[in-house]
Length: 299
Image (cartoon, rainbow, N blue to C red; front, top):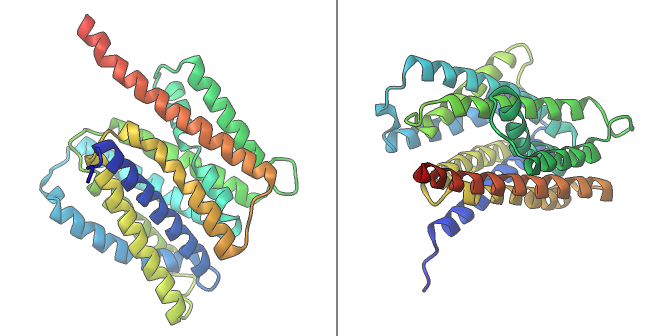
C-alpha cells in the first residue's frame, strides 16, 4: 500500500478541518433558530475551551513561557477574534451559509493587501491582479446598491477586516509561541465576552435537540482546531493552504441540504472568482518563498 506523502496527508487534514469548521457553522446557524447567539457561544465555548486546554496540556504547550511582548500580541489577537466571531456569526444567522463563507474566504487576499499597505511587504503585479479579481468576486456576492445588500453583508465584510487584523498580528509573534495556546486564548476570550453579553439577555430553555446541536458544534470546532494544529506539523503549510477552499464546497452542499439555500448564478460566479484568486495567491506566495533561499545561497 502506497504511503501518502507529507503534503498529501496535510491536504487531507486541511480538507477535514474545513469540513469540520463548515459543519460547525451549519449547526450553530440551526441552533440559532431557537437560542440566542450569545448563549450558543457560551455553551459551545466552555466545551471547546476545555477540549483545547486538554490538547494544549497534552502537547506540553503550558510549559512555554511567552515574552511580555508576545503575551500582549496574543491578547490583541484574542480581541480581534472576539470581534470577528460576533460579526461573522451574526451575519451567518441572517445570510445563506455559502455567501458568508465565501466572503470569509477572501482572507488570503486581504492579508496580502494589508501586508503590502501596512507592513511594506512586496507584492508583484500578478498578486495585485489576483486581489482585484477576488474583490470583484466579493462584489458579485454582496452586490452593493441592490436589494440583496443589507446590514448583514456589512457585518460579514467587517468580520473579514477583524480576521485580517488577527492574522497580521500572528506574523509579529515569535515562532516559539505554540499555536494551540493562541487558539485557546481566543476561545476563552470569545466565551467570556459572550457570557458577559448574555447577562442582560436571559437564556432560552435548551431542549435535547438544541443541546445536541450545540454539543455537536463544540465537538466539531474542537476537532477542526485539532486538525489545524496537525496541518502545521505535517507537510508544507504553503502547499496545503489552497485546500482551505474546499470549505466552499461544504458550505454550498450544507446550505442546500440543511437550509434549502442555493446561490444565484451571479453569486456562484463570485464564489468561483474568490476561490481561483485565493488559490493563485497562496501558490504564488509559496513559489516566492522557495526562491528566497536560492537568492540567499547565491549571495
